[in-house]
Length: 418
Image 1 (cartoon, rainbow, N blue to C red):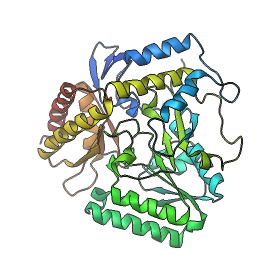
Image 2 (cartoon, one colour):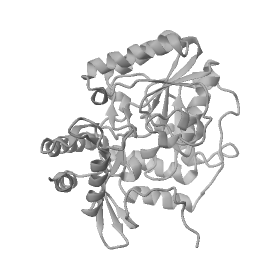
Image 3 (cartoon, rainbow, N blue to C red):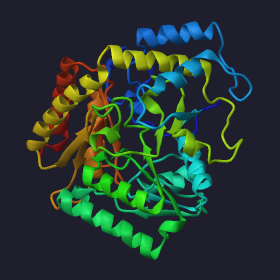
């Protein structure tokens, strides 16, 4: 009998029948509060009626119009519509399907536009699983082990992960910028460095927010040396952090932004945004793809953008995120097993550590599994997979946050007793 690959490791045992809003309903008849959102994808919740209607209508008109062969209206409307929400100056778009594809497109653009070979990424970053994107990923060796040699020209600088270093944020930030300058002096000359690729907040790396001083330092060095600053907003974009973009928390100006996940409420769609001037510096024909800018995905994205605006989901993410952060910290206050709770908006991570401060993977995994048994779906992340993360849809209500926190409190008590 044909089966799925055994390499696909399931985070929960749930087999889903259907989803609605913040809930998934299993074939076992049980209801689950979904605080994974398809890893931050179902921003408007499961099967939002307006997204469903837009996709259904589009399926009856045109499913696929390959966009280097013909143009179609959903693609053109989405391109125009994104101009209302993209960071200032980013007025040229290329669409693909996955986050990894968007990263590879931004990489190609950066090297071709600057004529430089090297890329600097930051410790703990996740950028994807394809060869180039996996080379640029340092959130865990599981994403890059076993298929070396990887791509050359990628160099790693520290991210200001204060809790990991045991420092305050200011000390961690000064260290990170100092080490970046040392990298320039010892590994990659600024004149051979095409771009910085960085997440506003580490995702797979442990839900660690950056800070304004760190990003100001990156922007200063980028401007001084003609280096492009590429912000990976694949997980943090479209209101997830309580602002439209993660970068909005830090006042940083990007040269390129990569987008995906929450853009189309579950339909595959990704892209990169840059200025027309920068995009024009790449080689003609260097961008393309069979499925990029799919008509149904674009229709779903248009509906998603309308729902985010009309239902005030960015503000909701900020308010519910603060509620979730405060509640998760109250749970952490009752046990030494959780060393830190942190996040932005509806991206909240609880880091489990042992009594001597080492990563406690076993307890984090136990908590994630126990929560699923109690009806709350969560995921883990971090280099040691010792951070339990909460990623509810942006439509989550105050009552649903309270429900989740109640389950989480019971879960943590159960796995840390004795």
